[in-house]
Length: 335
Image (cartoon, rainbow, N blue to C red; front, side, top):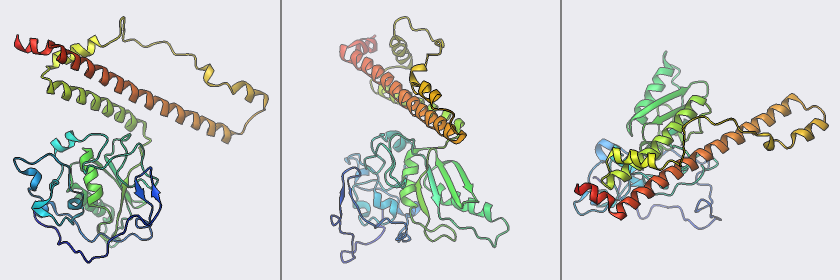
């Protein structure tokens, strides 16, 4: 790997510790990331020229994470760097854990207020918001030209699953196939030049309210749990048939996969009788209450789904470990 830029010891750097410390984000408060004071990036990573072997790629090198400064295009270590200097691959994406990003930084339970930063582990983290982009109005097909520019600029960092350009608001949403690619692209494209725009804005996208997308996200989370179980089982030498038997044996006694009767939810609305004595309410107030109840029900369902997936994965992994400790797996392999 080549040196992207030489170290400048006399260059003025930011002095950390002169402001108040934010314990939640483990950072000091400052105005250096203010929207008004944003400056175009001085460097840019070129994967074709900058990618290469570093110390961690040697035969005796220890596994590491990706170099944050390499992604920004300003690493002064080159082949002496102790982090990876290449684009995330499928193996790197599968090796990522939910608690950290590909640069080794801890993720949080929710996004920052401006949707910037490391990200959170409660969302899939594959979709980026791209703002402050400009159209070249001299072109007859200005929308198609800008869409091609966005796809070309962000497609360098990984496989794009979907790209949507909203011309009315001059923003775009880029969805990657793997989370590792999205995390790398967010760092690499922050405050970069794109077309006529001198400094684009790249943030994490909000969750899509589309019911079809939410359903697909639930399926993806379920697949993630199943994949984690299969990887752990494969590391212990279990076959797919043995894992399937473990999952069946893990079901409670007398379990029947049928739809249960709808529960009585009257206890969840104790204020209904009180509202009847207060007189009629406005339509706006009724809609506001309905939206609040729907949002609360959605959050409860998401939490229940996450707990169910975690309990199921924990139970299966515990059963696999118990069989491995008791020697059942070794005896089966010997046969």
